[in-house]
Image (cartoon, rainbow over all chains, first blue to last red; front, side):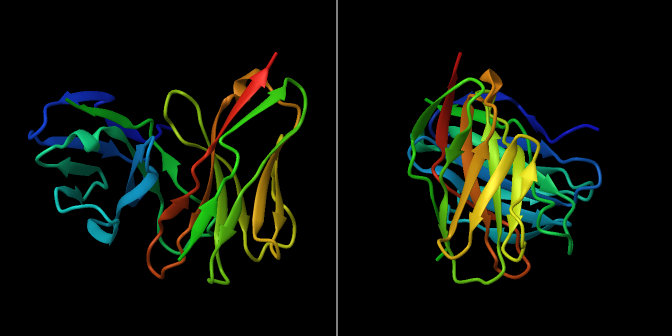
Length: 116
Length: 116
């Protein structure tokens, strides 16, 4: 079956611009989360969505926002880009609900964003 | 607050030998889950193994096993018979036990290099 698909794979933006990243979860998965990975800060949690509702948000400024659609696809948006936003952005999905914890996330390959 | 610590930034192992990657954790939640992920240079996070806090036995998945020592709060990953394809970053993660959410807290990772 298809895995988690993230588009685009690579992106170069200029400071001050905005960007939208897309994530298509595995079919049947209703929970989607986003993580930012940088060499300095490591992997940091951005958002968690379940059935179009944001259930949790990490410690990021308001420039970072996201949403989930009725088909479980998710987008995240970063406005007024800064150099420090350069990172690998990973999306992950799981079926959600009261499932054994071992059924963890399946991650996509990420979108590598470079801000110049 | 929950925390994951990986103290080995980098490790080398000879092909076909076993290697142990260290992970210690801190949590006050009696119910938690520990995960190990592999991240090759392509960026995708690949799930390897899971250990629940109430599991009586150490988890095993093929060549991967988890040495779970609850009293010491450690969850070390053991890779037996290392292969060249095992060269990658390895992350230990813990599920944040907050009710109704499902997010990971990651360690800083260990870069493993398998030598021919």
